[in-house]
Length: 145
Image 1 (cartoon, rainbow, N blue to C red):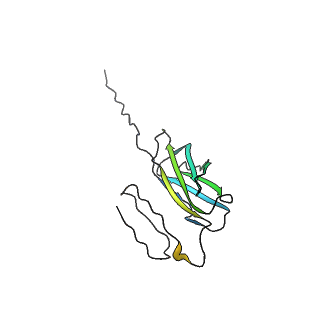
Image 2: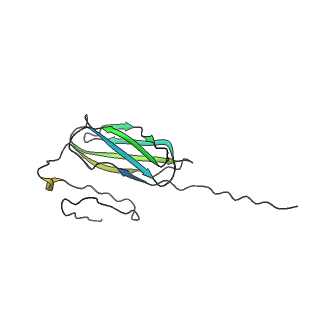
Image 3: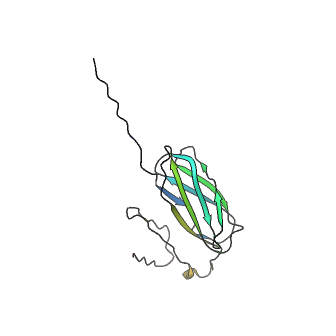
C-alpha cells in the first residue's frame, strides 16, 4: 500500500498596515485615506477617528479588488480644531487580527504663514518598521525613551 502525505500550514501571522492620510488638514473638507496591508484582507475592520474633544467617529472603508487596500473619503467638516487620531485594526482572510495602528492628524489648527508652530507627533511601536518622511519643513528632533 502506498503512503500519502498532506502538509497543512496554519496562518497565525497578523497583517501589518501602512496608513496614508494627511498629517495636517487646513481646509476642513473630504480627505482620501488609504490603508495598505502586506496580505489579503477580510472586509472586517475597525476604523475610527477620535477628535480633539474625544468624540469617536466610526467609518467603514471599501476593500479594493487587490484585497490588500482599504480606502475611504472622510469629511472633516464637523471636526473641531486640534489633534485628531485615526485608529485602525484590520483582519486578514483567515481572521488574524492586526495590532492597533494610529496616525495623528492636525485638523484646521495650522497657521499657514508660520510653519514653525507645526509639531510632528511620531509614535513608533515596533523597531523593525521604517519611518519615511516625504517633505522637510524644519529640523526634526526625535527622542527615544
